[in-house]
Image (cartoon, rainbow, N blue to C red; front, side, top):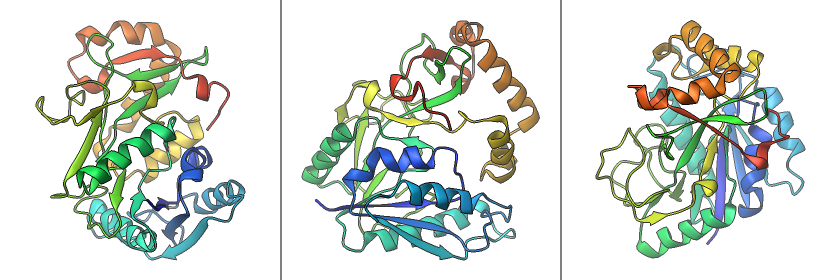
Length: 283
């Protein structure tokens, strides 16, 4: 089974660690970015820093740089994102059976578990792999992390879309591929994602230690300021309030975790967790 990957460059915070976590699995990594260095909505991105970090993490010359025109402030940002991803996926599909589509703030702690489930997806005739992600929210002063969790500090997964699809797949919305038969993996025999219905199918169960680590908010203050400006979801987030909460929670992780059982919003429940693989890694 031949694997390629694509990456959308512009967010350098975790990009080297991300591609490094699956580098040995793939033959080629298509790196797609807007040639003007701007986001889908027209904001400046750190494209050159992203490219520099990736090239430094490419000892075997697997990276193919693919600039294009992917900014249009007059259109709905997620439509532009979908077109950008489709262009990158089409390029990465050449010579591949499957294409990995991990974002640059997502890390794969157990490549062997990932490839085992991808093999099962292939055998089942699925066209896409939905693999659970752990939302890692902040690094605490002790070096541990705050992670989104269930009401009683249980594991909670997230699925922004399939993280691997068959070559030639047509995307319907961002990473999603509507209508494609899925192989869906979770960290329990039942659905653990509050955004999905309780009876969402679970075809295989893995340890939560092997789930993707989504490091979206584990950043420096400067990186958070950039994320606030360029995020495709910036308009849906009350950033001043969210950043105040983010700072407080990072400083007071135990008090934050104690609030989990009474938090009404499932995205506001956190537990304190140790991630030895990231203990000394900085964004």
